[in-house]
Length: 376
Image (cartoon, rainbow, N blue to C red; front, side):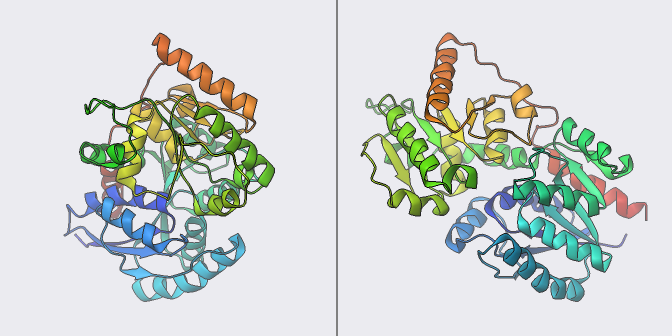
């Protein structure tokens, strides 16, 4: 049987968590798959990229396009220009793109023009909000992909409604959860809880109650007044429990310009590697975020999640998981936190892990790609 040449694309940090389990699974079959890892360099912070490669046991990229940060148009155009020659030189059988970042749509477009097949992992998710750049990336990538791997049933329904042939769609589960399941045992001995003073004073492994926060979407951080209200809310909440906030670089500059009331219990951190962040998320009392992937990870972990957005492309995290949408104003956030804490104290929080979020999505993806090769 001819070995298939598979080219994987990573650009921003969430991509790494999605590609890592697929590459790890393919390495089990060296006679069937030859793998090439392309890092577009879309992410602004190369040092953080290095941490993620190390944490996730990803090999060093075979090719780095070195695009860097910029506007959406600049990034997308530069990735396309630099990726075309890579494709022409390597001519892979499949290009695997993941998620919804600029690297995803840019590389898929180049493949489409050159007649190279694209497999889209995490296809079909929809927020139905086209003001989000990620939504445009998702819709367009799905239209030009040859195989679409979905994480939840709503994604299948979205794709069928948009005219994608049923035979192209495969419901495989969530590769983000594959990475979480694989690495969760490695969080047992991380030092970050001790370093942040989050262990109980008696020295036991039990942690104090704390809230974990991430915030990076333009709707929450680009407007200084909105961000100031969110930060003020976090300061108020930190009077009741520590609030741990790894700060996205796009948010850091705006916070530095604010005249903020200080709080010793609102702890700003630099961005963290995956294992340290997973440790904090696993033990948090609740998480406040505007991230997509964190909605999924908290659902699996059974940690209450408040998503500061008007919508989510991951509705299963609400219908079956621990996620809840909340508006980005102080009163709404404080009420939602209080409500969540009350439910926790009453033991009324429910937890349900969505179908096929079992740590084996990458196995299904690799098996499908192998069987497609047999059928050629």
